[in-house]
Picture 1: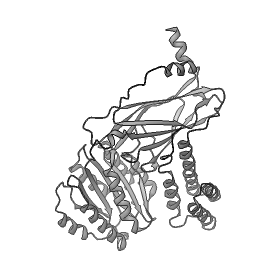
Picture 2: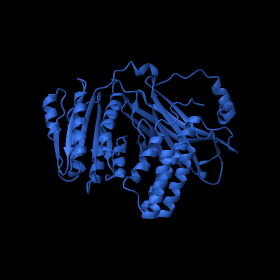
Picture 3: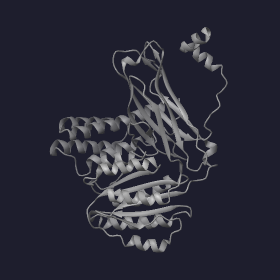
Picture 4: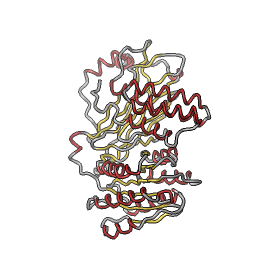
Length: 446
C-alpha cells in the first residue's frame, strides 16, 4: 500500500506506471471525445490564472453510417407583423412551401404565424395534404405588432402533439422586430422546451430585433441565434438549418459537473456546429452533434491561488457528459470527465496544441467585440472606439480584411455619431462569431 501511494502521489512515477497499463476499453461505443488544454501544467502563484480546455465530441466513425438518420418534428414560428410585408413575406411563404415539399414521409412540419396573436397555419401531422397546406401558407399576410410569446407558445404546443424521443424535435423562430413585455415569459417557455428535449433556433431578420434576447432564448435549449441581414438570404438559412437538423447524430449533450472549490467555469463557447455562448449553469447544455460536424466547446476556467494545496495534481472539473442520440433506442452511457493539471514550479515551454491556439485566437476577436458592445451600452464611447480599432488590427493580421474594414467603419461612426450604424452592432457580432465556426476542424491534433 505504501508503494502504491508513493507511485500515485508522484506525477512522474504515476505517468510511468500508467504507460505500462493495457489500453482501457472505451465504455461509450457510440461517441468519442478528446480534450485539449491551453497549458500542460499550472503554476503556483499569488493571483488568479486562466486555463482553457477545448472539448471535442463526435460520433465514432463506424457509427455514423450504421445508425439511420432520425425523422424530424419541426415547427416554423414566423413573424407576420406589419413590418414583414412585401418582399420579406413573399420570400418567407415561398421558402415555407419549398420546405414542405422537401419533407420525407417520416418527417413532421408545422407552421405557426404570429403578430399580436398566433395562428396555426399548418398543423402538426405525419400525413399532410400538401396542396391544401400550400394554399394556407399562400394566404398568410402581414398585420399587427410583434408579440413573440404567443407564437412561441403555439409552436411548442404543435411540437408536443407529435413529440417523440426518436425524432429531432425543434422550433425555428424567425422575427424582424422586438417583442415587448413578454421576454421573461418567453424564457420560461424555453426552459420548459429544454426539459422536453425540444431545441430552439432564433433567426433575426434586419436590424430591429433583439439579439441578446434571441441568444438567451435559444441557449436555454442548447441552440443559438442567426442573423439574416438581407431578406434574400432567408431561403438559404432555413434550407441549411433543415439539412443540419436532418444530419443530427445527437440532439443534445449535457455537461453535469460538481463545482470545484476556488475554481470556476468563467465562460463557455460553442465553436461548432453552431457558434454561440453557452449559459453557465448546471447542467450545461452544450448543443447538438452532427454526423459531419462534431461538437467543439471551449471552456475558460479561472483558478484562484487558494485552489492549490499540498497535492501536485489539481482537479479542474469533475463531471459527466450525457448524450441523447435520437436514432439509438438504448441510452448512451455517460462519459466521465475528470480534468486535471499537474502543478509545476515554472510554466512549461511546450506550445499548446495547434487547434486550441486557433480557437483561442478567434475567440479573442469575439471577446473584443463583446467589450466594445459593453462599452457602448455603458456610454463609454472612447473605450468602444479603441476596442474596435484593436479588433481591426487583429483582423488584418489574420487576413480578415473585409471584417477589419467593417470594424474601422463602426469605430468612425461611433466617434462621430456616438452610436452604431443601423446594422453595425449585429454585423460586428455575427461576423466575428462566424470566424469561430470550425476552428481547428482540419488541424491535426498535437
